[in-house]
Image 1 (cartoon, rainbow, N blue to C red):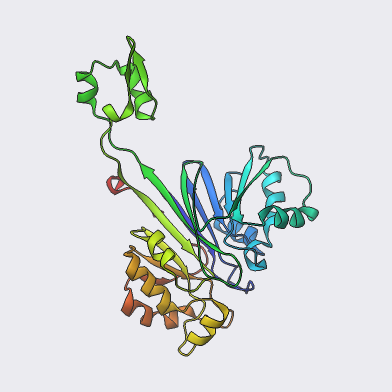
Image 2 (image 1 turned 30 degrees about the horizontal axis):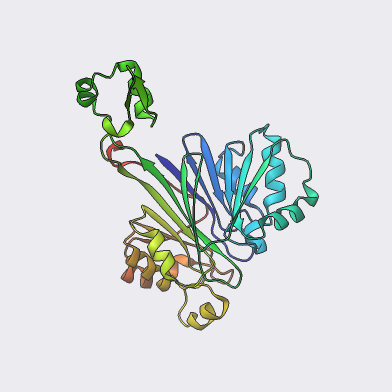
Length: 304
């Protein structure tokens, strides 16, 4: 299963009761975060999740409301007695931005590994997460992310017995390792069934609607998308500043055939996002105007 928490839902600046937009996931003992603006540490503490297991932090772009909380967060992770390397992922320029921010966080007890995204579409495999980064359309270079947890097929016990593979070798095959028995090689595909449906979460903020979002969010269990503006008459402003309205986000969710969409990254002027969600639900009924701390436990199909 995959735990997903939308730590904050605000765009531009933190507000009383609304932290800046950030996502955190937990899977198999590893935590992943997307964006960490000012105050994100407080949102994590309010949720009660741990800092130490954060293995990956992905950045959509380098506007302050999405990265300015990094120095303090790194120091807190260091104070949690972490020693393992931590991976940072973001658009080109990540090294320069991180170096600048680390002027006030120069000493860390763990290594930082930096991955800079340069192509319109890139794939990464980190700590059990399959990460697809895709470029979107904002005022600066910006990426969305799809986080997938693949699931292998079931082990075919009868087939393994037919092939004469000893039980002591089954675990290796189940974990993707070939084995040698009497000079003959047995590969995992010989005893593993077809891959089962995994889990997928797509996160996208600070962008106009683009086809790359639909393509990457396709069939997601959860689609978290910016809804900067919910009120009528904000379409021109959304186009000017390269953000989205609730209804534009809903159309993306519908086109991508996702199971559920959470809106986030609200304008500071949007005091009650839930008052404007009905129009979006006419396009995509499973639309939720998310609040800070909204959490879901996504389960594989046969986990109940």
